[in-house]
Image 1: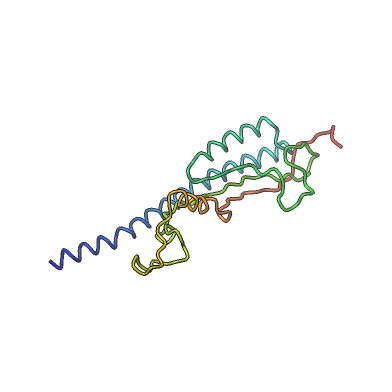
Image 2: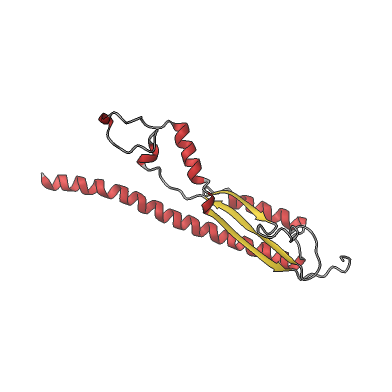
Length: 179
């Protein structure tokens, strides 16, 4: 009888560990795949800016269309092109033509969303109270579906999960008609 009890407890112990390992492996795989797709696209954006000294509208539309297909995965909330330096406002936006050698700041930014299960504490109506037990008198109950969905959305839109790949490069094309 004790072997059966040991087997049950071992199984109960393995289930959450197996779930966490599966989430960990999935998140590493999804992050790697997403990061390298965005890195490849950022190289295309950078190369286009270097060759033309700005981003022409035809290439910009093509890049945005591809960026939309990359954003359709479940792990990216929003992905967009960075067309100006967020730290230096003196550099023009990357869609304006400019003279040879003028720096162009371009890149990709995406909000990556790690897929995580809600912890049991996050499922409570009042997350500040711990699991004190149902009979302690302080248990306020479990949260409803709308609150749980809002908490999942808050976790998903964490601004610390941004992938920013930004380059400032000199343009190479010469425009004799610009001053």
